[in-house]
Length: 340
Image 1 (spheres, helix red, strand yellow):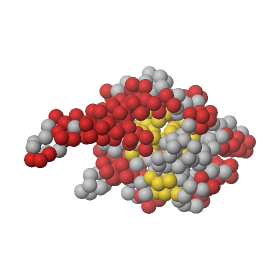
Image 2 (cartoon, rainbow, N blue to C red; image 1 turned 30 degrees about the vertical axis):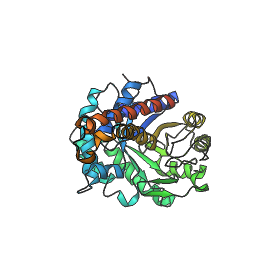
Image 3 (cartoon, rainbow, N blue to C red; image 1 turned 30 degrees about the horizontal axis):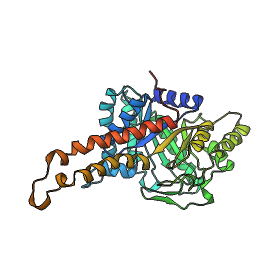
Image 4 (cartoon, one colour; image 1 turned 90 degrees about the vertical axis):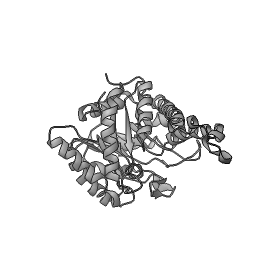
């Protein structure tokens, strides 16, 4: 199917929230990892989201210029072509963008989509993320309000992170401490600044102990029940039940129970990067170890072209990552829920 239209993307989130499931949002850094994500969604019969971080966009821009915008635009244009061959709806999203990279990433991409919309087309991306968690909440929400208005004009959904996610991703890092828990007051201030839909739809990455990176279950103290407190706290004042569409960041190593609780409390999108990176790389490492003599020209020999051909190990990498995406769909209850 074509990349999701703004109408389809909104319907995806409406169905997820009503059905208490979420879409895996898979970070991609190449056409190959994009295909792996699309394949995983198709095999799970789940719609989904693929996303590009600032670091991923820089990598896609090539190491000569490392231009984030050209890298992101190029992969998005590629996705608009190849996604038509997969029987699922997929949305394109940009992941964490801090304040110092807005002018070099999100703002230019918003302009690209606005130009397309003004010409009667759909936006290039369907959503963008503003990560103001390193700023004061006041500054964070002021910038969020500005970006939300621009996103609405381009028929795009904005994602905002109002309080920190621990660990490090693409140069944005936060300590693992008590600040990793969003308060009801934080949520109320967000609703006051960004509205509850009347100013435009946005996704909220609230913090409930989330940490980026690699952690075994139990090593990070997640409190997904906190999301219920945020929903109820804002509902009590606004009169709107379950007002937020939440995003689950830093989910590697989460238990099934933690994920289920998050889904029950309004999570509609969950980011996956660390786990899918490993699922992509693991078959490559296995191939290299098994075919050491063929991959390398050992002692003046010529090696075995069939084993060092990137297609030989690339197919295994795609399969491994696609299987991890399928697992994510099962964990998030999105398997078999695709819009037809």
